[in-house]
Image 1: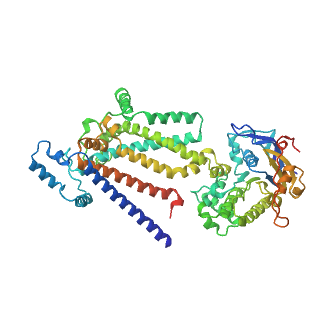
Image 2: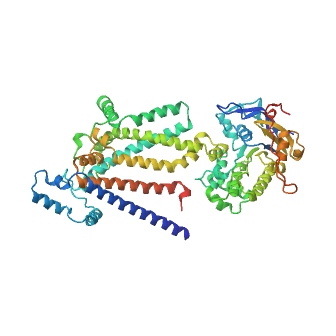
Image 3: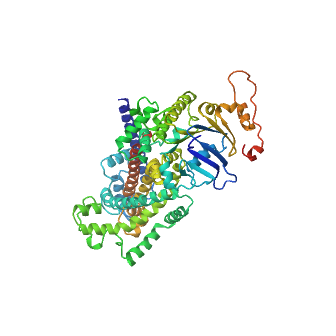
Length: 341
Length: 279
């Protein structure tokens, strides 16, 4: 009974902290919208609009009202998922986001899977073989991933794997030929093509996502490798590892059955952060691969000062990070008995 | 002493990059008895224990002889060591707060010791572990089985450790300061439990400690280590008749509850102790 109440309290506490964070986020995006050094009215009416037109639009946007009233209106709009219209695309921002975000999520998810599946085992291997040749090779490998700019590896990757070897598809989310063939339901191309049972589109999409995702994944695996290595080194020197070895477990069993369980919490944190970074910041690779994703959308709108779109993008990034944090909190509880109330 | 479990001659251990070896020319034999190893911090007693189990792959271990029953520990491959460790030789570590895996249930950690060496079902290993928890006098073994290490007290944690290490009926147990991290009130209890099991099962015990009284009461023989060397070997009951000035100094520096409350003497170290030949 007591335990239940404690658990409920924890849930309520977490819910409250999410709400507070969201509120802070809304204030932030609102302020960003007001202090951006460009004139939202001008962006709509153009440079040579008359005074009357300008004033009318100014009033329509609600810019004449007191700031607190504007803020309340903004909250109302956000609550009803009305983010206004993008000046650049002429479409509701929500429609735009629902189109570009899935493309990025697809890319980032594949990338983080690759990054974690490569980075974690490499980090463990490096830690177990600290200061031996494996460690040095892995360090060079991950340092390269860290230091080569992604737009450069992107271009070289296209040149080698697409132009020369022909192993993967080129830029875009699928071959030109297939564009528009698949009914858009979720905007996740891989899911849509599966739903429509269009296997060749699915194959083409997979072919196209492989290279950018692995390059992105490589660059985040560099970070994941380094962190995994240091987390693992911390654990290897713990006494319970000696206990496990005294019991007669082999190095491999000791590492994977005992040490690895103890770094999962930390791993979840950094992988979630890396994933968040991929979701918001894949602009460079999206540009190189002509990937119609969230990063390019945000950047294009930022450059012309498309206020509604930029505010919404910031909001989306914030919500993504809040969601990832909640997810890691839940995983903490799954992975570490000490954090269970 | 018939059939020695352990026969060690001139064992030296040097850590990589160290100027002096941590253990130098240590020789002793161990039967089905309780041998205390006493010395100050850094005297090499823990290193000695870990070297016997070959737990330090990086350290450089040399010896004239290091025989565990029929196994030559110097020549044994890691594969062979895996079969020995936890099965025929095991070690009780100092502090259960650190020596138990924090994210696994106490009982599962005990059962794992059994499952590593015996072909058996999960249920069988579980029953074995519960039985052993009962043997270390834990009152509700089924409940404690399911607890995580942070949910048990130090004394209970150390009993979990003892259960884990004695479950497979080893021939040799090295107890590396098994009670130093415990409250004074539970020390004796834990030691009694360990002592009973060791006698009952006829295990050869090496008790590493810096506590002279503890060793006097719970061991048959005592090795006194100083600066990596064994300076004196005595029967525990003859501890008061120690010859070596270092041992005498240690004994003299002990506070006594009754009698004279004057300043305790400070050990006057003689550099010759590090050099002289074994007595």
